[in-house]
Image 1 (tube, helix red, strand yellow):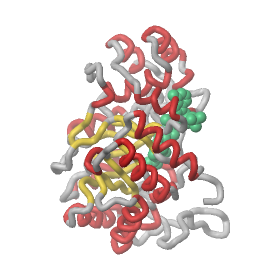
Image 2 (cartoon, rainbow, N blue to C red):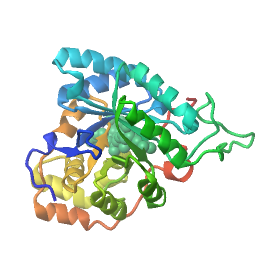
Image 3 (spheres, rainbow, N blue to C red):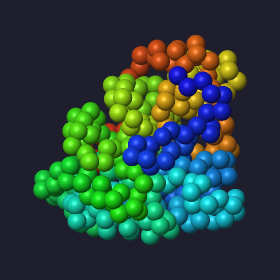
Length: 312
Ligand SMILES: NC(=O)c1ccc[n+]([C@@H]2O[C@H](COP(=O)([O-])OP(=O)(O)OC[C@H]3O[C@@H](n4cnc5c(N)ncnc54)[C@H](OP(=O)(O)O)[C@@H]3O)[C@@H](O)[C@H]2O)c1
């Protein structure tokens, strides 16, 4: 357990000499373009320095705009922030990887990325339609490319120096272990859903052993109620330590050695979610003892994520 009282400034080392990742990450999966801009600015102002984006969120331009203006206002250099984006399922074919990467960079107004992730292990029919479906509404998968083919193209991006680190998202041990074993450049980060109802202990242990950063999304259970935010153990600890349930959940995630992504949409929530401090050992242990198990995001089953705006 990490005991540092200032969890907010904690960073974790990335393998392959790719620098360090701030543990507190701001996620940009926000459907509304104006809210994307204001929430990204608010997160920067609150102290977040790690920003998680994706081609699939269709708002990289807004995030890029907010980061550019926000950095200028706060006086931050490019190296003061850590930016991730993700390759979508329709771009798994090796020849599509670099064009997709360059298009994301252009939208984000950046000339390099700190981290590029394969968004899910599912390859979809290549093309401009991000959500290709057959006449029965079923996703059209691409059987002509393997995850390792895509990984090799990701490795080439690192070789060319435009991307510091690469990793995977929405994978389990079944996808991660073969890629880890075959990779010339090992995955630096694995991004998956995780919170006290989905601790992913086996995956976390593998990541610890292999120096892969485990990056938890939905640390608040996507804010769903009932969910971890309303769990009686979390509420009781929050009352005891004088923090909010969200702050308790985020502190627990950092203290167990993971990085995390959270999506506050207002300035007040951004300050709240950044203002975390270490839990006492007994509280940490109590959270580890929660027995409820629930996954909130089904993306790992099909590659079609929830929480994407309708019609996009
Ligand atoms: N790799 C993937 O497939 C994948 C999938 C999903 C998400 N992600 C990434 O992970 C990021 C995190 O998203 P998330 O949904 O998992 O974040 P989250 O922080 O677990 O949940 C966000 C929800 O929690 C609520 N919330 C935020 N702060 C709160 C607080 N202090 N108290 C009470 N409720 C609070 C928000 O409510 P309001 O909306 O009312 O503010 C929102 O509904 C995304 O933006 C994205 O970058 C990745």
